[in-house]
Length: 152
Image (cartoon, rainbow, N blue to C red; front, side, top):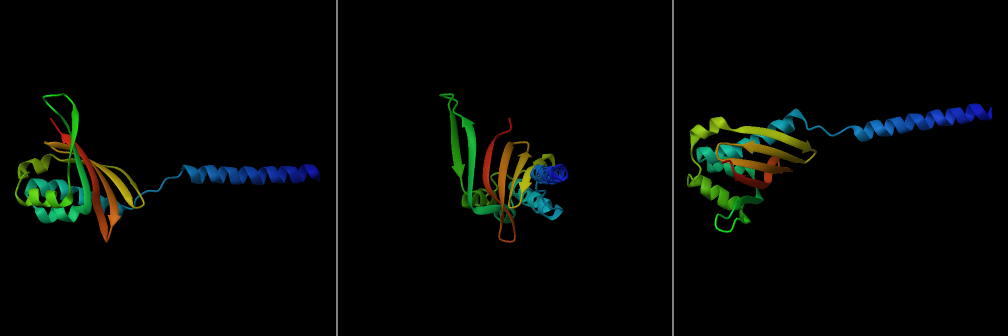
């Protein structure tokens, strides 16, 4: 009888340990709706830039955006960072700083990861390589951080 109880306990423990490993290994997968909204925000950002469409740019960005560019100082060889915020990005877009509609056709966008309320996207365009971090914001997704450098 003791042996049967020990075997039963061992089987119960084995069952629960297998369940916990199985649930630990599963990852959250973003819904198709979320993936489409993430893609839309990323494309509003980069296509808006190349179209000179400030409305699309503004729609894509969180008001507290932190966008940082990585550059090499040609005189010193040191790596420097330059920052810009959402308001300036909208202003530059409206002024047509990046307007070049033909480049819009050469954009490659990849959703690297999405987890509940956050996502990471990589965009490669003729001019830039951008790594975007997005967050669920209000009724959709907005770009919170961008780290970028020239694609040359």
